[in-house]
Length: 503
Ligand SMILES: Cc1cc2nc3c(=O)[nH]c(=O)nc-3n(C[C@H](O)[C@H](O)[C@H](O)COP(=O)(O)OP(=O)(O)OC[C@H]3O[C@@H](n4cnc5c(N)ncnc54)[C@H](O)[C@@H]3O)c2cc1C
Image 1 (cartoon, rainbow, N blue to C red):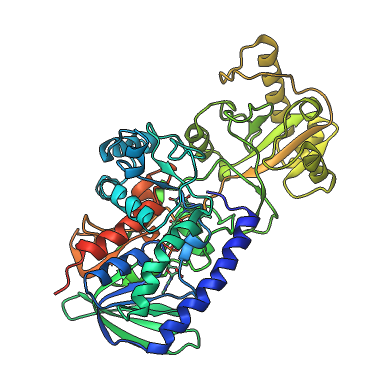
Image 2: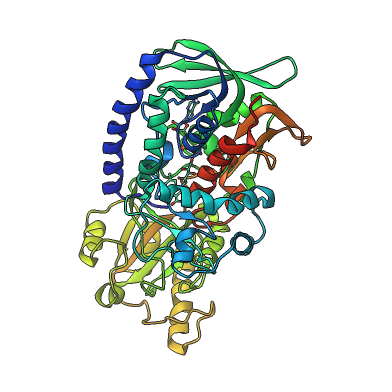
């Protein structure tokens, strides 16, 4: 789940276009005081919830703190997964929600929330078919079984050239039509700051604050919190994940407001222990959060490793050519600060294909020459260790042990690709930081997506969908392809279509 600078700039262009369209229409009509459904967040989950609830004739109000609709879809890679879709049938792929569920259990080692993940996969195919009906364009040759994450057993993984924006493009017309017809009332730049409960403890409204700081109260028969996660709230991220928020690639308004709102009604947050990072990126600076400068190509399917990976103790901790991306990520999980150094020598520079994605070998050498943060080069192993902040003797011993394995053809970690000893100075190290740009923990809900208290009872009239439920609910302690965007849209659709009962 990586967004390049080019894509990010494209996304911002779309933001401006959306903002002009949406805010004008909403402001002209003023605020409806009581509605059937008040949705906090016009993003991945909020938009379909509004569209489908409005189709049922409900009076819907949507508030969003941002100046535009779309939320994280403006940045997201937008990869989706769904089993039993029309597209799969057209391509002769026999698949089922049960097989999708079994794969999630396998990949996550049973750490998904079975109730929530089951709800997601059972209803994913109609969601995806609906998006296709709305004009969503899948890349040719898709679905596939996996790209950046652990592969599924069947091709059920979909992606579009325009990534998350393609999902937004597909949902925008139906949403805009409903706004234009007055079926949905949209208030941009209105941040939900408090939840109102009636005497019985049921949700009954929301206090919103506009960009000028003016507060108003909106009453609602039902409230859906679809305000996303907390991945841009560095303090909350560190509190829940136990490590700093290194990378700043999350949606800026993912501040965790919804978690606090749900907690104020008696709900609680669960799943923080499922935190996991990718296998590491090269950070642009040591001041965190920061942006991603680049990342090495860690996929042996695309480039076999010529280097070794060591942790802060200068120990190898994973067989570098292990085919499973999940195996690498799980190994990194147990290393200090989920960080590692890619170490190599001059012979690798001379012989190996480029290490860093989208960079030539010369680009990489320029980074060492410019002494960019994370890039270290030295004439001896000891000097390299000093420069990179690694223990000298341990790094020398690790390289000696690796070179012995290359010599004998018998690596002690079982690595098979052993192209050359690492003995020729200068020596190089590139520091990689494991990062996550999504929220692992989330608000506890039941099978109807009602916010629940610790005793399991539901807070009446209060629902939650999207990343506010935490990635751990649908992915567990693993990265399961497409298992955030698709569940967010699916849950929004289900809530609008059937789960919320309007009197
Ligand atoms: C770079 C990146 C790439 C990703 N790639 C993938 C991928 O390929 N596949 C995948 O499955 N997942 C991916 N994800 C995760 C996925 O995109 C998100 O989990 C999902 O889009 C979140 O949907 P949501 O509806 O919960 O939140 P959002 O879509 O972010 O919507 C929340 C909305 O609520 C608004 N809001 C926030 N607080 C308030 C408040 N107090 N009051 C009013 N409004 C508020 C926000 O402005 C926003 O519009 C990626 C995430 C990132 C950051």
